Length: 357
Image 1 (cartoon, rainbow, N blue to C red):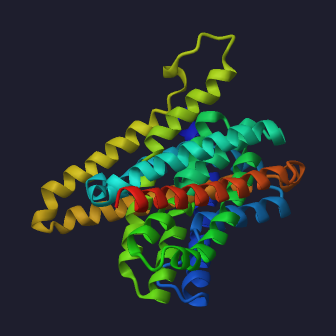
Image 2: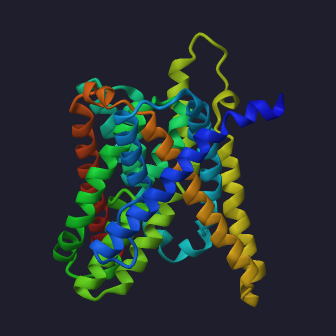
């Protein structure tokens, strides 16, 4: 009985892994060989979901794959999020934290307020708005994928939100390095803070910082932007339970509501992994322990594989007709969210420059 229950999952899981492998290969070709970057600015997860959507809408997915694909979207996704915690190092954040943390909090609160108003104006689904807002304010695709299970988001809503975040993230990645150089007069700290708080994806922030470094010879900007973005990523720990509470509070009025019923317990695994990394670094890194470095690198790789497999599974299960039926309004919301983060980031940095620096 045990074997039969789990054997039906294997075909779908294998299919998702095959799509991950192909997506990683395409990412290397596009990002490094065609565009010439050392590290591709394009997310492998983005390629996986687009590739999956194309295949899923051209071909009919056999029933033998469906259970495994559902398992990948739900359980392997959560495992990937847990593993993601290994790459966050809060003890490194102290250098820029005094400036970056208040800036990030102000940006998050501002976007949440704006999107709350936009839900009423454009009458878009609450789940969609939540996915776009957390994708815009925290860490793009990863934040969307992590939040989707706790608000019971539909597959087409996840796909639409990811497409939304990807489009505006790439736009900001290409435009903001040049804008910030002009506006902040080649000041590495302020430019790095702006890039790290206003661009959606970690890969896009790294690419924007790299573009800036290559164009204006400022490696410090890349470092500040990357660290600021990693600080921003840690807000997943707060935002996922918060969104779970806000969404489910309104959905369970007739039932006995309890935060324990909807709390995303996989976030605890995420937190444990963060502390594991930091404790391990304190114990082993002084002796330059190669085994510990290898363990960390392998868990990072597993996180990437699991999350990209989940993206591929979602892409395969997404019906493009459903996306078309959602219309253009969520994209307007995504654009406004991007603009809000950028404007608030600039404004807050200006306040810091004029009153605190």
